[in-house]
Length: 159
Image 1: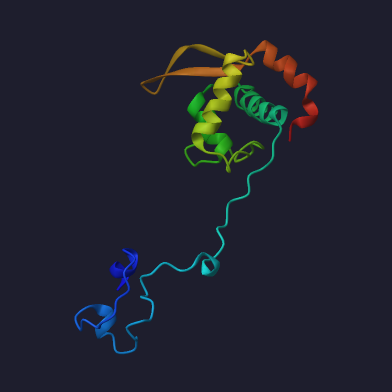
Image 2: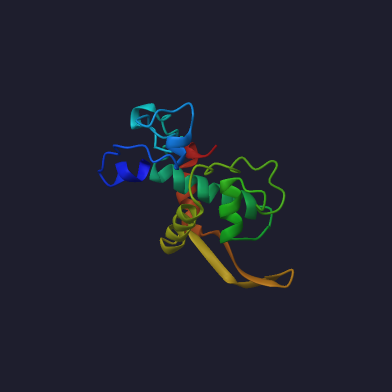
């Protein structure tokens, strides 16, 4: 019956072999339990709220987080910074006291990576030559002099 309805046909006889015809509690003209619910009966789609950050707030959070990490002479790569901002367990080092941890949990990884890349391209973040840590080579990043000046002008945006 479901297939007949799908192809625009109206089933007129009971075949006696399909699950709709052989089910004792259901009449042949009743909808199948496998038919999708009408849109009005489906529960509403609940989306995770996305924080509304301005471009300056996003820049301040990324630069502030990076400064917080590297201020203690620490080094971090792009992925470490992204994981920390997203609140991932694999985040860089000890993050218990980092006020920036998880600020971007509502964003996708690729979105945060693109935001960091934009700050590298605009010169607010600078890259160091490849660094060898625990047998792995990665590009360490830090707030540039220009980024520090920008942060001084936008201190009110930091947590």
